[in-house]
Length: 324
Image (tube, rainbow, N blue to C red; front, side):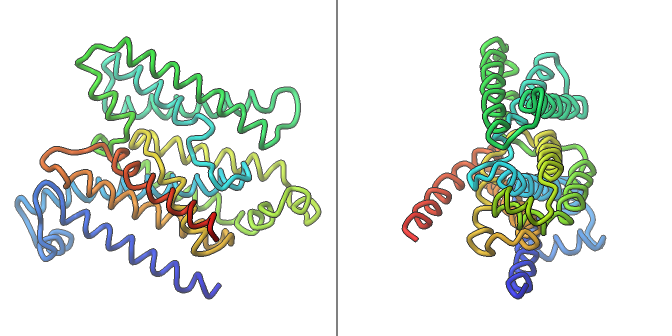
């Protein structure tokens, strides 16, 4: 645990630093002294409104969304026994996207749109689980194949909805698909989702350490493999559903953050679970700050920024791992 004594405090400092940067930078720069005065209630006027009403809620949503995606990525990688698995591999985001795009076509907005996305994600979760289980037990490979096929079906429906949409609604639909934190109206769902995800996953850390060694080894050591797999699937799916509801489809956070933490901390899930949450949240806060700043006053979809940064970074990590 010596590594945790160094790594986790460092990641906590990174999370705090990313939050301060998010509060200071945007379409207009706010100096750090004004940010501090706004946080302590000693600053009023425009600076206070920008920091407390615009940037702080968005930074909180970015952190909780990134943390949930990274946490779900860790759980999916153990469930599917594949270090390249991500939270979207089983089609959860596809179901949310179909429901959200359908809602946009019908003129739904705000909390109702978020509710539609969450309902679509839950429907996809139960559909994949039901099809993968069939009439008997289910395996990781069967679950993965079912998820891939369902995701392909959702992709076809998404393409159909985009093809049938009027031009006036296309921009909003594309922003949702590329990931956008600008529509988050409340920080409460993300905070509750992240807290529940940590509460439900951290007690299973020791069992996950055994699970990665193989199901036969886990069974021989008394780990209830079937129940643990169901637990992992439900927790990871719910985390993904809440994250997609808050920000649409944001790629690479749930893949890159756990992978980097594995390289740094190994496979001890007592470190990996909280560390990935802190690191994933920090990455998305920094990516969202860049999305708000690079071409200000216009904003980029944050999913574009995470992809532009994530693709070369992950290719580098794969090359480094292969050489090693």
